Amino acid sequence: MSAIDFETLCNNAVKMGYGAIAEAFHSRSEEVMLALDTLNDSEIDGMETYIRFLLASVAADGTLALEEYFLLRRMFDHILGKTTEYDDAVWFMMDNGLTDRSKYHGLIESMRNVLSRLDEPMRQKLVEISVLISAADGVITDDEKAWIRQIAFPSEGAASDGLIDNIMSTEGHSDLRNRF
Image (cartoon, rainbow, N blue to C red):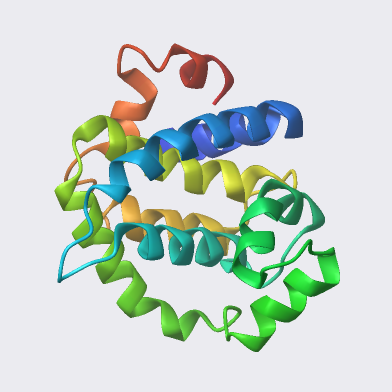
């Protein structure tokens, strides 16, 4: 995939608007959670890794936008064990060091491990979820793009498994090709 294709993917995601992003995010998230629930073993907890992945996707640009909070509000409620407000989520992100990208290396390796255990459609959905989260506030920053590239393109500069190309062209993803 070329840099132009990736930019087009990101630009089209931003154009979807929040309502369509939320709908696509929740639909894909449910499917991914079911698949990840079956991965739990002594090496990896699929659901824990997924939650950490979502939090890191939100924090990739160093901020928690209000739209991102609303997209993940149920997750914040679950993690904190109460009905959360935006300020609660911001506190949680800061208190847990989630604005420090230097701590993401282990998570990136965990996500690559998870991706290697999933079939291609589920792998694509995880990348789509990261793009959708990043687009929720109406812009995908360079830092967010860099985060997505680390997951989608394990070796820098090369799309070794073509995840983004497949998102753009795979049959059954017409809703994303048209809106993304």
